Image 1 (cartoon, helix red, strand yellow):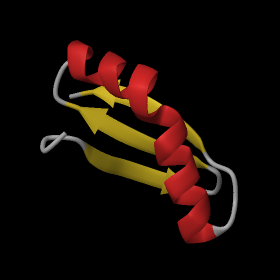
Image 2 (image 1 turned 45 degrees about the vertical axis):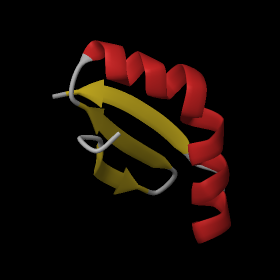
Image 3 (image 1 turned 90 degrees about the horizontal axis):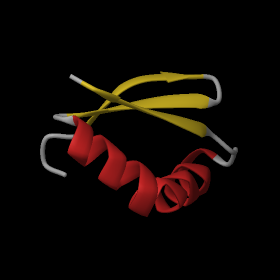
Image 4 (image 1 turned 90 degrees about the vertical axis):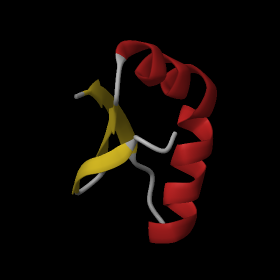
Length: 54
C-alpha cells in the first residue's frame, strides 16, 4: 500500500495508481468498498474508483 497514490480526482471519479497488476487487483478486490466509504465520509458523495498500474 505504501506505493499506491491518488492520480486524479475528477467530480465523482477517483483514480488510484498501484505499482503492479497484483497490487491493483488486490486493492480492487479487497479494499474498494472501504476506500469508497472513506471517500464518502470525507467529501459527502459517492465516488467511483478506477484502479490502474504505473
